[in-house]
Length: 460
Ligand code: ARG
Image (cartoon, rainbow, N blue to C red; front, side):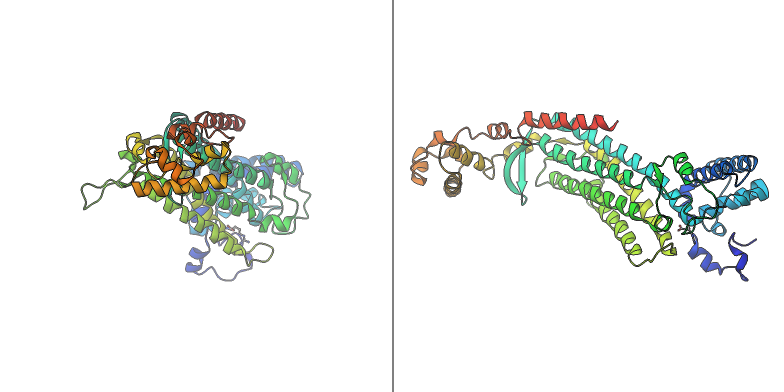
């Protein structure tokens, strides 16, 4: 027997065409979803009197047997099956006989592949949210541990202002929080069931799409059959979510590479997250961090691929759409693994305070604080800014720090200033007093950690 659709054909498919046409090599990953969809469909056909209860029971039992056979490896597929939908349908007909041929009443592979993909993605979105939640847990624990620990805050990769390490962690916490919220949003919009849209225009059978939507755990059926079979927006949204989140891991991975460099030495990456060189015996390279950066490019590629596949496709189904799955699966696998590995790398990283400490004395990290202190004693901020700028010039000429400037040095810069007017210029004091909402002061970071935890509790 030829393909299930072969009635109008005089010739079998060319063997190269068969290979090129088939999606079975990758869409069998959705076999569970395909079987769930078929069970919901045939249950509905029975309820509507389109098949008998007995026929539905036979088909469902056959489908469950096939599910078990795929799981234990006794049922396998090949290119003759073309795709998972026809693979399962032909195994069903082998298993239960002619009654199996009734399953495909009032549906099409065009809606079927979309049911599978939506069910699959809903499951993977939940998995992804739990991976990201675990990463957030690690971030919160580290933020707590390092909420008082001073480090250099940068702009333009130049020393800017002192911050705490916990504060930096909480910045990344916000990014991954938005990633989770974006996934929840994507999930709520895609939670509609395309089953029963059929090829493009619905069906003459008296189906109940509300019933199948409910049985499959969707909030409702999709509104328009033509849109249902041509819509890949939800995949593109997911790939955008993945790309944005991978950009976050990539940015932080980049910081890890910097922090781990011999020039910085802010951290020492755990041996178990590094690799050596085949020629240079001394090397311990931050490969995981670099690979995480690289994986980001790959997920961007998956997003661009699907956007490009879709851009010239008219309504309704076009075979181009079969190209929607490999990139999607790749992004799911890559994103999930990246977040998991990132969380473990983070958990196993400690900061080298002995290396960070001397760097806090470089780059006039307390300059803004001194200007703010002068401004609060009545010198307009713009003037205070200029005065501190000239103090920096003076320090650079003398090769010293603000603390070393004498009253004479200061009054030569501006008659209104003296050492007392600089305030407490210690880095600790600078950080402690940056306690505006969202600032870096330890007790403010503590508030951010608590707010983060409260939000995490709403997720469970
Ligand atoms: N394997 C196909 C896909 O993934 C299923 C739908 C095929 N429909 C069709 N009319 N050729 O898109």
